[in-house]
Amino acid sequence: MAKQLETFLERLDQANNQADLQASAEDLRTILKVDHVVYHWVSTTGEQYGCGTYAPDWVQRYIEKDYIRTDPVVLGCYQRFHPVDWKRLDWSTKSARDFRREAIEYGVGNQGFSIPIRGPKGQFALFTVSHNCEDAVWAKFAEDHHRDLILIAHGFNQKALEFEGAAQSGPKQSLSPRETDAMTLLAVGYSRAQVAQSLAISEHTLRVYIESARFKLGAMNTTHAVARAMSQGHIVV
Amino acid sequence: MLHFIYACDLHYYPLLQSTMFQDRARQFKDRLGWNVDVDAKGWERDQYDDLNPLYVILSSDGRHAGSMRLLPTTGPTMVNDYFHRLLPDGPLHSAHIWECTRFCLAPGQGTAAASALQLAGGYLMKRFGVDHLVGVFDKLMTRIYRGIGASPQILGNSEGICAGLWGFDASQFEELSVRSGITEADVKRWFSASLAAMGKGNAARP
Image 1 (cartoon, helix red, strand yellow):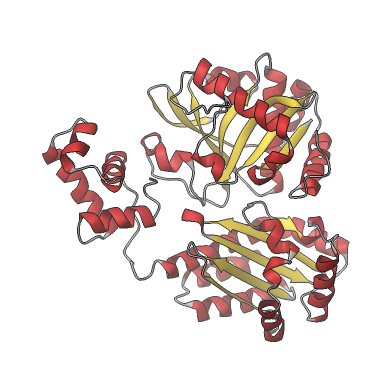
Image 2 (image 1 turned 180 degrees about the horizontal axis):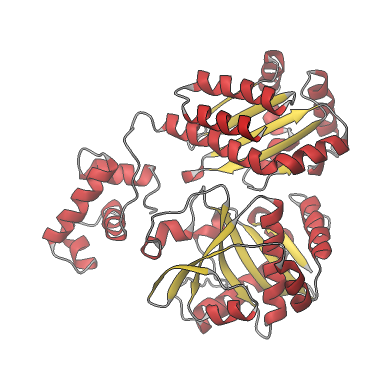
């Protein structure tokens, strides 16, 4: 399976759009021999999308009933970052138990393993595999594959981040410390003269830093560069 | 006892919370002289405490004895945001690297407490497929790290502040157990208890 997963990751890396991601999720289900593979993403602006193999009527039901508010998997993983076996989550409330029964009826399976992912700037995603089997079998699966699953989860997320930033394209390069300082000070409203003074450099030298940052960010002008530096997480103000 | 608590659940443990942030103020502002903010309550907190980090806290009689703060490097981290000058090869983003910062010991605590935290870190790494912890620390801490047999690989060093990378292999458990008086089984049990209490605020309070 190791070889298959390697090939899978290479193919995932070639994905160009959401349809490719969907095909990847379906491939992965076959490779891992599990009932379902699901990747669900919430962008920094609260936008959601996902891909996966759950039955369409379950997805529809989930959205209709707004189960995102009761699903113990989401509640347990949101804002956290350690992978979790579903058995470890809190299923004690009545709404959680009802939800679980229904999920099983729709073929989700009685077992699951979810990996929360934290991306830059507050992006959040959840990667899940679910299956129908006995506890011991699932525990063994999770033990054997948790490392691979983490890698795959981040592979999906990397793609999703790439798609989100697609409009801005261009290779992402990190800014040097001086470039970051300059962008940060500009972002908080300093004039060029004030920035140069704060950094104890001449305005000419400052121009060099701004110019190189602008280039790295693929920005059209200084204002655009500052905006991109912020949206891409190069600077925090 | 060790606790594994996300920031969002920390308020369920008020004494542990206040003593941890106060001890951090003592260590980072008073002792090491770092330029950190301490609020009216005497708590040292920064913007990364707002990103829902996972704290590993060693307690003694319900009070903070030592702690560290963990964040995944796929999201914002201190080392990538503020200390790139310590990273000659560029920012670190990896599913298999977590950032560990604010490694802090309460006054009077020493090698045993540091080893307990190290053991807890090793346990999390093993359990969650994390190969390395990356951290920013004061050069003065290198002696403590050496003392507990956990010297990091130094990535960069500037003005007394270092960035370092810790690996962990299972062979370290035994020695850390001897030094801390805690076994891997203890850590596992405490982690499960912390996990069960997550977001509920009723079980396993100190």
